[in-house]
Amino acid sequence: MLKKISLALPALLLLSIAGCATDRQTDPPRTATEELLVSTAVDHAVDQIKLPLPAESKVFVDTQYYDTDGVVLPKYTIAAVRDQLLRQGAHLMSDRKDADVVVELRSGAQSIDYSTFLIGIPSFPLPIPFAGTLTFPEIAFFKITRQIGVSKLALTGFSQKEGGLVASSGPEYGRSQRKTVMALFVSWTDSNLLPPEKHEQAASN
Image (cartoon, rainbow, N blue to C red):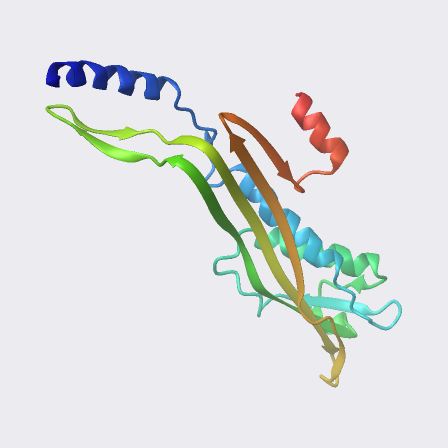
């Protein structure tokens, strides 16, 4: 009996290794999906920002209170806010002294939440005598993996000369999502990271 088990174990390990695969192959510190999750959440938050400034206001965007610790795409976020202000009729000034209104940008959140639900056998370390430790691959009969990008942004505009409040947007929230479902080794993905036409084009390439 012991002999049969010892012969079956290598075969089982070989079969499980042959079925093991990964889709995280990247040289940058973050995958394209992770960056899209954050930038899409930023876009959704910025699209909701409506700062009721006087028509054709000369605006200086002040980012000194924009907390970049932990922020994934600070420059993209700042540029997206500047673009939104321009589309709402503001005139952006490069020098604070030339502005009528100073707009301060602040961020309350910019990150990715991750969750997974598994029916099957999770990956686990398997000690092999005289060979070290082998990681036994995950076997999923049903699995749901969710990634949710979150962004919280707010703008406050005040008079350059008097310092009084001109306008405030209040916090706006943006979310993005990517969900992958696997059932009996068949998987599919749903997300809002790309417009429908771009998603179809990417899938066909």
